[in-house]
Image 1: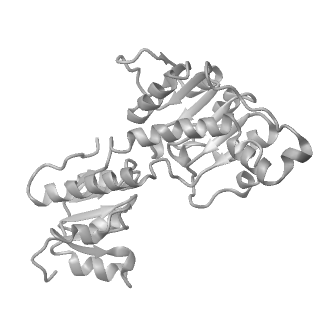
Image 2 (image 1 turned 180 degrees about the vertical axis):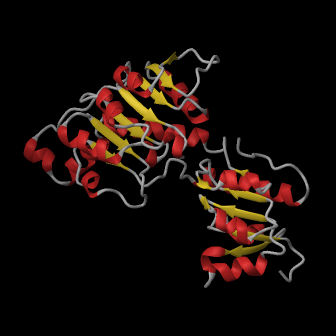
Image 3 (image 1 turned 120 degrees about the vertical axis):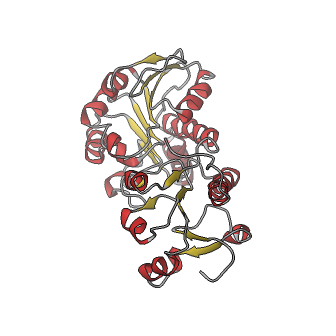
Length: 315
């Protein structure tokens, strides 16, 4: 606006990355602190070439920033960004892949084990004093030697498969396309994968193409002895079908890190304490990884403003 530094709109705070650390090369305008959103957008419209967000950037914000050239997303998912509208305006959209791959894969294994071996339930069992009163708690499920079905064999799915091979698990997957660079079994659809798998782990991206992909038919295919784990996006699972199947015993158990309307979680799921493990969308939530995500996000902005190609444009 009145600074020699380039104006950058920050729609949401960065993960674990104080904005003071980026003030050296840009003037940070914090949308979440603005008394009037439209007033801030109008004030920086002539000079703002870059915007940073964690998830959401609607088309009407683009209309109010006619000189915008890049939207840098701090995260892998960008389904909340109007990508087609950005492309029509010549705006580059970037995200932060790779830097969180290993962290999320670790977490997927942890959540799978937590559900199978009933770790959260066991913790409550001890704290509630039930062990001395009731003796041994209900048994869990075996993980090693089981069948792992991965819905979405991208970077994170591959890292998850690599880890689970150490458990002696047989691995299958479903993608939109067969991968010729892996030895794992390919299934033509999610239903056939669910029917085969003991553990069904969702690692798909969000967006309309995957909304409710895991519906009643897929959940019934996973079955009363199967375990569903979601570390992808909440909208991929049909909530009503999931809740119904868990209540009626048509699905064995679930571990959920993401939800369709997070941070709001259906009360029906919250009340399920015997066969469901719930987590607050924290698969990538370590200090190291969130800092790496924030740094890559800002490296994309810096590269664009300096006239270079951004490092990680979305496909």
